Amino acid sequence: MDPSTSRPAVVIDNGTGYTKIGFAGNVEPCFILPTVVAANESFVNQPRALTKNSNWLAQHSAGVMADLDFFIGDEALTRSKSSSNYNLTYPIQHGQVDNWDSMERFWQQCIFNYLRCDPEDHYFLLTESPMTAPENREYTGEIMFETFNVPGLYIAVQPVLALAAGYTASKCEMTGVVVDIGDGATHVVPVAEGYVIGSSIKSIPVSGKDVTLFVQQLMKERGEHVPAEDSFEIARKVKEMHCYTCSDIVKEFNKHDKEPGKYIKHWRGTKPKTGAPYSCDVGYERFLGPEVFFSPEIYNSDFTSPLPEVIDKCIQSAPIDTRRALYKNIVLSGGSTMFKDFHRRLQRDLKKIVDDRILASDARLGGNVKAQPVEVNVVSNPIQRCAVWFGGSVLASTPEFFAACHTKAEYEEYGASICRTNPVFKGMY
Image: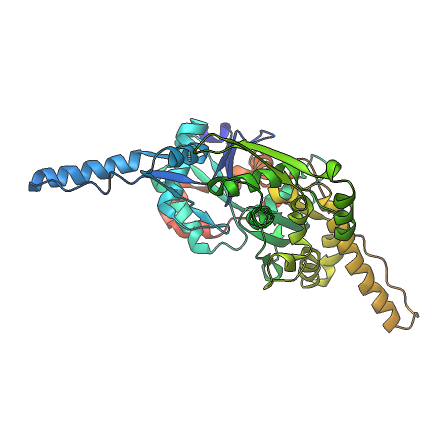
């Protein structure tokens, strides 16, 4: 028996904005880190020495130091502010790995500095966006098997894990639509019996970062005295702490105008350069930020399809025998679905679209045949911010996981192409 199968697997959920890392079987990830790397570029740009031998030695030393002197997560952000020598790199853009060198460095720090484990002793479960190319899985497999020498690897699609987050001993509903809204990408992914219906996946160009940029823009246009260098970070904190979803945007404007003392919040801080205190008001952006998902034209004139409409199109393009089950289990995932009442607004708007279609269908048939009502259910739970990681934790703690993993021996025999496909756990349902 492989001794590494007796140890908990390492689960790493790689996101554009944040990465969650921890061990299988836990309810929460051990660490949630911004997906960013700060590398010291000063070693690479050192002046060359005069002699041939010392030149080679200097270049070699610079390369070694550049490989060693880097930070990730919050440490990287702090270093970049305190020293101009550190350049920030965001290895994942819009859900896809954009810089593999930085990604490898990021994983290295995650494993050795944060989890403090030996990768040769643990199986690994990594996550990927539903639109990831098969070649990217090969690169991931090469890094994991060659650099970290892991005994086993499973690459899971994030929406499938979000569905698996609802797994219990008595029930594992693996059919549903996952609405995954992260910092850099928004995907609507239908899953039937654990398999992603690839042809029906919808992606929209509005994500958590766009909400932050819109809040930042609104505060700037209103003339709030926010330090320019900190405005994005303040907008992000305002979004996370004060934003909510409203049921009617006109009524919400009236509420704020009638009782500003009740609805307008105050933000206080100190300017990073001078240390001088400042304050600003947080008003309409509290509900206008999340509104970009339901009325995207207020933010982006090129894209005007509301999220409920996109979800409806996604389900309507799926096989007809799966549609009722898909409407019945719409699962939210990602930090940007955590706004107060987001799931209620989404369910109400989607239900209206479905009911209007049924009424139109009945009218066309002249009332002779009545269509059965369609149940629309948007599932919200407290762990949806980490739903993907939690689903990975649940699946990686089942006996089927180790059997489904690609092993180091298989990699050495067949090569990286084995990572292109990862079997769905047949024993789960």
